[in-house]
Length: 411
Length: 190
Image (cartoon, rainbow over the protein chains, first blue to last red):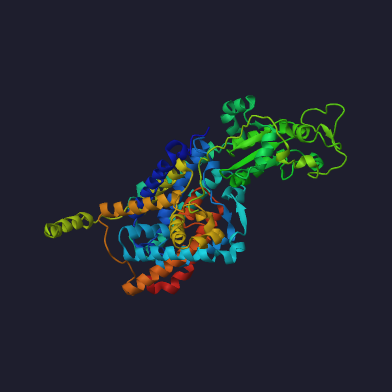
């Protein structure tokens, strides 16, 4: 399994994990302070093109972190699926960003820097932080009046790679080059408009730039693991689960889980459309096997701590293939319907006279029943009443504690 | 009574230890940026989460609201998510990260002799105007940060580093908003 991010809650407990966050916050505040971000006049100078400290610090931080992150994911140390990528709400993000730009130039800080400023006893920082709290309060009280807009233009987990249709490494190299050009331009402006002297240490600066570009090119050369690569890494451990039948749940357990309001069960029916139209369990989502890969980012976002995914096909072959894809991409709590829909129909359809078994066995992963009409979920067996059945089975669903991102940088 | 006699020299020693350190210059912005990048990377690498500030502040606000008017919190969907029922809005990693940020800023300011009660402002406005503007700007910023689902740290910095498309659009919007208005408020800073 990919070792990072760490399952902090499991390793250190609830409070232990919080201590890690205090330490990370400490380092964050410390670095902001030594960069001079507690001083509003320095921050505001960015907008008069005299002092590009904000641009330099921010973009250096972004490209350094980016190169390290994608080198780590490329080497299989870090699981990109488990880190928080801010979901894109395009227009609310842009409007919010414009509002923040206005607040920045009037108030002289952003929220993080105002905290550091207040901590070093700058009175304007304290006023800004108090104003920030008030603005946050106002937002909470008014968001209900424009909730539709606030939730609009939602693209989910949408990256620059998805937008440009380029491999990760190419985007990483591009962003580094763009940042270096911005630094060069910023320094020209500092000299022309801010009257600052020519920066010293040309050799060291060049070395740093070359190191960054080299790092980015390395990320490009390593590449990012495909779903297949990720599966190969996990195969030994996960094939054992399949062989022990530890992830194939009995139809009775699925039915009981559907009735359990502590759980959010998402059923994924990976068969082709014809079979799905003939019969499917009510509220099962149709997701043909060849579309599973594309749906993974969206399933990632749906996965809450109490979400259970159950994949199903007529028998188990297609469902097992889908299970492998989902598990390789770290979708949590995925199970397979044991014996597929054939088994489900055997258990719940035996008193429905319209359901007749096929005279000859139709082959693996085919429906074993003949349907008079493609009624989809309008069969009694599509939505059996959990209270009518007393079924014997070994419960297998064990909710895994969620590892990694817990809701985002500013969530 | 003896305590009063003792307090004077003790207080000045305490004050000296806090404010008396020689002031040091800031680090080179590229060095500061690289260190910030390493901290950001470690945050993602260890926890899966990036850095954030406004989300933590948000939860402090909701905590206060929940103390004062819990019925109100239970009626507003946005607040309910954080503080509904027996949920404690402070039970969140961002609350602790924010606490750490304050501590880190304080310790660095103290170590480098920059702990100082002062108001930084442009030369052409009064201290009081600066305070009012800081509060107003902070309120606008706080509002915008929640609107955009993250501030400069949580959206621009963290989302930028993991290449979220929305975070990059957001980042250019922040700079765009700032530059668009900068000319009209130049008296505040120049």
